[in-house]
Length: 428
Ligand code: HEM
Image (cartoon, rainbow, N blue to C red; front, side, top):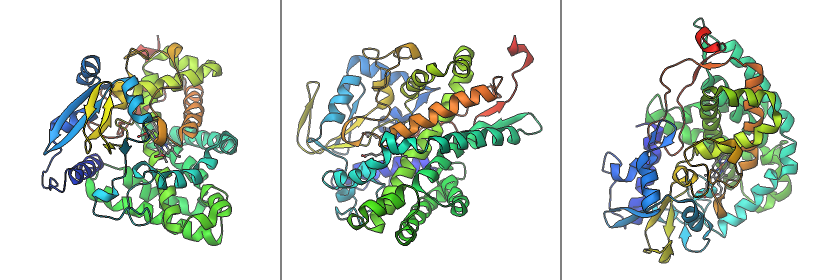
């Protein structure tokens, strides 16, 4: 079982738990009628999603052993759900046989936590993500990008190609998160091994599952270590400013939430974004020549690619009406971010058009759980794409068939083989 299935099976377990303890974990596969919205057709959402949005943007997807599962595919409807702070819970702990305390459940951070616990923890984190504090990371981000450009050049094999995902897309957010968290240089290599294993789906599930606890344990130990000797980054800063408001377990958990929230998402955006840009040479050239064009291209790529395929599941606490549809208490509402972000009532639909870019797309979510790291992710993307285009203007995709993830919560590319020079025929 790969990471994707692990996540899907985690989701299934949660859904089942909500359904009143019916044990569906024995099912060996997520049923297609539940899982198909996590599939893609190339970089596009599967056509069915668009058809559903145009016909019925708030749809009962299925009834799964008594549990209603709703799918929201329109932009306005998605905002309505995500902005509603009182009708939904994202807390899965009471349904996993654990107590509601954040100090006991190993549930993956803020996303699965409700207020007031969510507000308490998020308030500790947000000061680290203000523009002022993030600005201090800008030189580090630029240095990381420059370093990976050198690595990419060095990684070119005898056949003249290298894997942009491995040499560029993954290490950049990894190293930036190390900077953000304030991990000492001599501990990064070990952490990198854990991180790679965690996101490596090629070896099957066991490595990935084992590594999940490995990287979390690493960050818990790091919180304890920094308690005695606070470092320069987020972990040390929270200890300095709020040390008495948070224990090591919660701090390690917050750091792990930042790490999991920020690594795979940004790595996917870098790899997929590069793949799209390399197939649109005008855009590629524009990124290299015109720095003013960069923010709009990045926003449009975020919308167009919508790497997070579904927002955290929202469990209905009290009956709610969305766009005229009544949804029963206990139901689960899934918001399809790619479907909402391709809604032509609001955006350029299925066309990538930076001239129509807006920063208010849903790629980072909306409302209570909106991505804490959105500005940091933007900084990385705005630094990485133009630097790549300037350093390797002739970079080209070196495969006929891109290796897209088939079904996943975070859409991505397993690898992106590139050549530093375009084929003579293509250079004309
Ligand atoms: C392009 C990169 C990224 C994308 C597309 C992305 C997307 C998202 C989305 C869609 C959500 C959940 C929204 C919801 O269900 O309401 C989220 C939450 C979150 N993200 Fe990101 N993210 C990215 C990068 C980052 C980075 C760099 C960090 C941190 C360094 C980060 C940390 C988080 C955290 C901690 C949450 C949970 C917030 C909460 O529940 O209050 N993300 N992100």
